[in-house]
Image (cartoon, rainbow, N blue to C red):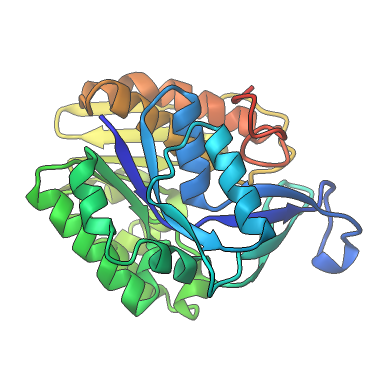
Length: 309
């Protein structure tokens, strides 16, 4: 089954040494970034059929992103470069614990919406499953398009995967607005995957078990909550799988580790025609790959053409 990943792609300019702030950074190395780009590339490298619906600016950085996504095996028939937009760039730093901070310039969502204008529903019809995040929900036009695609996928009986991936600055630092938009995507989702902070934002539950139960009660068929070094839990009706603690890692950077985790999950789902039990089988491998991603500066390897190490 081919999974359609809808969202934005950006360029991460990563300072490859720990710093307390952007002021201390002295050099940056480019890497393809954005949740959707990372998930799609990871899944494609695992052998899954993955298409990217979105875009970037028609500029040097946009062409650079296109080349690297293509080299990773991502189908780009619904990915375009928009002349009226510039490719979004994020200056990215990490602290001593490997936690990242992004200073984003440009609007990758706008470029993606322009790229798929009039095409997204057809792309949903031509593929077998849909994946999206909350990034495209924070803008009114993009949000309406996202929810239309989600509704169309559900009407067609397609599995829908939702990763909140909440960045509060996109929501003018309004947790309530972000939570409401994310919760509107829970019902009938094949899978909701989030971290502990996002689960708490959406459900009000600080206990991951209670948060997962709330998502299932809200209509999600499966819920995965990642817990950082604490591992991850998978909950569904009749299914309880834990990976606790997470596989050991010498943490350099946590940039994109959650994206790699989800990419492994999506790959196994696609390769098994979204067979529910594939989630349980994929969870340990996803946790292992996410741990290895923490040992690199970027989510994927430096070359973006050699596969995940």
